[in-house]
Image (cartoon, rainbow, N blue to C red; front, side, top):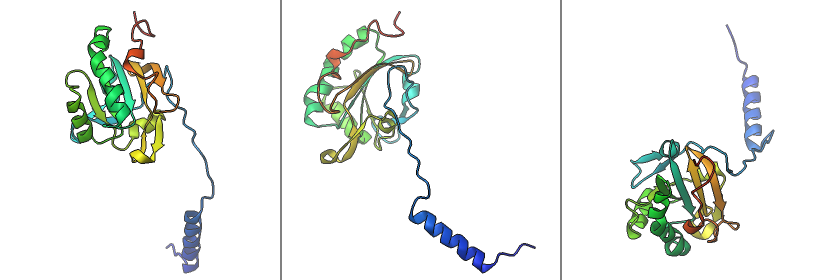
Length: 194
């Protein structure tokens, strides 16, 4: 028979409290932002409602996809320039071999659906929500913007072929409107193009 003495239990309890009070060992995992040549991380995004999950790797498998991300739906730069540029260039991008154009933001799916409806994205751009920022964090392309509610996506665009990043354009300050715009993308003659 195995007996446990009360002093042993007190010792374990004290050790537990000590360990929970401060870390005995710290290790830091340094993530590197996604880069050209990397495969996309596995993540579920949401389209129109929380019931409609879209796995980003399934969506991009065997396809050429343009994905762009914005700091927030309904924000001035996103609503006046970034999203409208992709809406007006969607047909051109698709004529150049793009199968899907996708917009991602750290917002809820209802907000993304309403924002898409306001900009007539139906049939042109899929509006995908990343409510808790899981996808953006996995890409290591997040930014803290307290006036917009805290964690958000940096502004970027990428061309993806069969779930692999073949072009990546991240705004230098994370929020500007220069290299990630629709008219700056080059979807022809990139890696994997015949």
